[in-house]
Length: 431
Image (cartoon, rainbow, N blue to C red):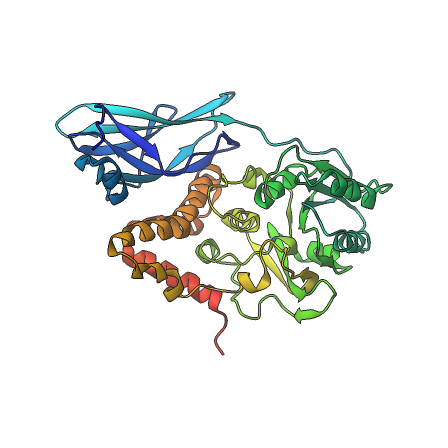
């Protein structure tokens, strides 16, 4: 048995980000273990720059920690919660910690992380009523050339295309620059480090000129129909965002599906439904430039977040989303795609998701915790950031939608109902 020093023992299950873009407010998911040897933690709170915030849960069973340390107090040591990080002027770092109140009296604190604050990149200065934001990384040059040609062929001509390259190889980046050379409507910016598709789309959107009235997102290997921008601009009306259907094709142009929505419900009007089952496809969208004031910076990339899900939620939180019920681009389906059509239209079955429960019964708690974090905590991070940035401007009905989800976190029955709702959105229309 390891000898433990007195005081508060706290450890994170996963490290917090080393840096954080706060903007008008952001949130971090914090989880780990916390205990005081030889005694019991009566209550636990998160500390954000010294200010207390409630944890979601503490005193949760952690058999793995008990086995490793042999300290009885370490068994009920699991905790998790959402740390809400409000703007704080010129503060260069944010400090995340814990404060425990010990049974019988007394308090103890532990620092978990010091996180540097960073600012997003500045917008480029370029003319264009529509800013097309494209994220690239080692693009297949033939497909990239076809996509660039389809953008050049748009019937709406007043656009600028900002390309954020995610640190492709020097040779591939040179090929990207060559593909747009001599055309001032394209602006290419290379990240100094690898970001991943989620953060690279954030960077691409941050580069959008402030003078643009609307923003469209573009993948590096799709094919836009010539009237894509014209049609979306005509359909957006008073909505904050509009998106279209897509045709699914192979790289050689073979049509796999005439619609993206053959096996899914397309619900873009209900905030709770959009939260639990995203329907907005990024490459199909066009939205108002002002939407970026709420959407940027993106939520911290602690989960498998998708940029289009977050953009859609920000749009619907404060306004409406419109839909054009016909394909306006061809979505290329191939092995290198980040999220394929087949995967996006597939809902894992209960047997698959719970398959690990056939293992040692003592592992069930660990597996439940993993699924909870992936399926619920990542969405609670979204709702926390929407509260910080948009709450006072949201309608009462939209606020109630978020509150309903947050209340469900405290009820197994309500969570099951929301999970079933998400499954209904994904399994498709009745025959």
